[in-house]
Length: 116
Length: 116
DNA sequence: CTCATATTTCGATAAAATTCGAAATATGAG
DNA sequence: CTCATATTTCGAATTTTATCGAAATATGAG
Image: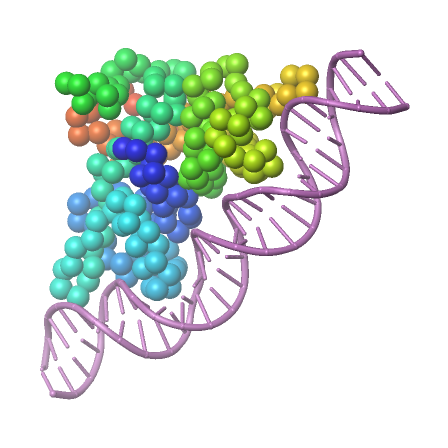
């Protein structure tokens, strides 16, 4: 993941309705949730929620599929993983930035993965 | 870490100059860097950089100390760690969201830590 | 085809973030 | 005290985000 992609993802999550929506989708798992259900559970008008879902989608954090009349959104765990990986590699000095590091040398950097 | 704090931190990192500045500070380690050096290395006017450093500081991601005429900024690894922890706990389904999970059950949730 | 449901797109407005020069503040040197 | 350096704060302009009702699009039922 490059910095521009990371900024897109960080920005997508840096908004309360979007973070809440993403968390709902993470909880919902592979089944996902239809746009209307997300909007209703968060008390946000459908058109506003649609705007936020588009942001998350554009950032690659969620995927969309149609099921009859509903558009079902699902969290993309891979994208989230990539974001966390980026933060750990670029913003934690290359090492897991935990003090009570339970698992310090196990984290493989992107470079190491590419080399393997 | 609660959602509001996480949103602050995510928003602080979701901007190219700020992300770049934070990465410089991570590289610089405990010594940190003076505001002027960051601004110069990123080619950003001092007043603009000052604005961005204030955002990062307000989000708790960096700390400030005065050394003679310079204000030295340093990355706060603990805050970064907390952010990564929040993302892993709340946005990865409670488990490390890695597919090739090197260290899956080792990650302790905030609840587990509080209980211990 | 017509109607109802689910959701997005449009458009206009309001709110927040970004930019950066100029002026103000803080510190130290002579 | 006066001057130079380092940085922030202020103010004003520009750009980006967020909000939400109304209209448009997509799908399926009868």
